[in-house]
Image (cartoon, rainbow, N blue to C red; front, side, top):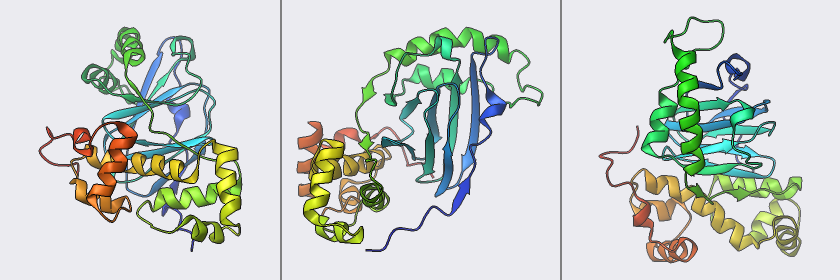
Length: 277
């Protein structure tokens, strides 16, 4: 099986140095409008961040895993953690940098449900980079007022377990990345193992040794991470099932309910009149 092509548009780390938080401005926000298949290269910084999109789905990857983030969720990334971002579709990417002295003591990435208040607080922050006149001359004062409430709301947010762990082994990681980019592929484990020059038995053992789960369990996590944002955008269950590699709706629904305890329709945001363009 041939490897999937790399994203067509690779960009650097989107100038985090122009938004560094400090004691005077403990919260700094930035925004970027990015096209689907844009890849923000691996980078790190000295402060933690909260990443979300007001529209569009993104995938943030670290050395240990990959996280699918639809607009209803945000991803917390600790300080000094290398990460990259892939735009699954056109997105308005927002990032809030937090001064380390006031940040939650979370040592790993956390997927968080965004409350209306948390969203409003994040969107109220000025996004002007250093070296340019502030859009709001009172931005620094407002950031200091917003900061304690935003952190309190952040710590109250519901944490969601939809991460997809990734292995350290280069060959196994290649196999995983191919599936993450093409979750509808119905290639067997034997076929995927052959593509990386290994036997099916060897790959099955590597999944258990390195990730603590079977191939079937890992694939299910990857499919759920792919399907949840599609459901959140209101895509019909039949289309989500097909896009996830299932031949029938019933098989997909059975897997989904066994894994989450709920039906796929319970994750659809029916209040939205139309999905994001």
